[in-house]
Length: 315
Image (tube, rainbow, N blue to C red):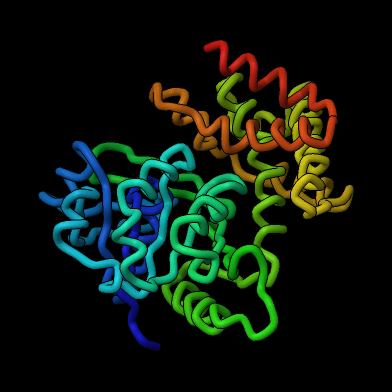
């Protein structure tokens, strides 16, 4: 299998883990980061501890966005992956706008929410966008240059918003899937990635905001006699919101996603970690995305509205 040249835009807990897996398999991986994390990556390389089972250590090219623009062309890479928080999507696209448009390199988004791919498509065109989601993975930066991750760490990917007849992206996506699986990253291809993104949003809206509010992990929330009903309520509101995008999730999707999150290990959500570290929360791309669509459909979303309001109030 041909080795790939991959740029990982955002080498945090999720991006750092996948970058390490791909580098371990021999792919040429470059990273972007900032601040002390970037400094450590340059000086000592990337260290990833996975589920207390395996440690990866790789010295990889690492850049700030400015250094990336000065040192590389987008066409130097076979694939660009964005694994940043969705709160950073607009800014990174503004930073890399002309740089991205100067090539035809496909771009894979591994971010929370359902609004990143439309933003990316508005800059580079829909024909280069591959939607993706990281499933059953928890990860964060332990200290600069050092990432920890856990979970099955699966990836679902597919041409965004869905695969059409003779979609020119389809062969490349299949190649990526094979490469990811060979690197130890369980990966599957979907011909309707927007549907999969909405199913993940059902889980994200169910547990991420509530975990940030209560400081509880996923298992504590889903097994709690009261909070589990709030989780289910927020997930149900997300299912209804999907109709605004024509995705039309069903009761079966709701029950399947609730069963899935209820089977998770005790994982700290990314929003809970951000809350603990005093970082901005991805509220707009998760709860905000649901509320915006419920408003458009003239639907009430009392669970999501309350939790969102409490978090925005600083609780």
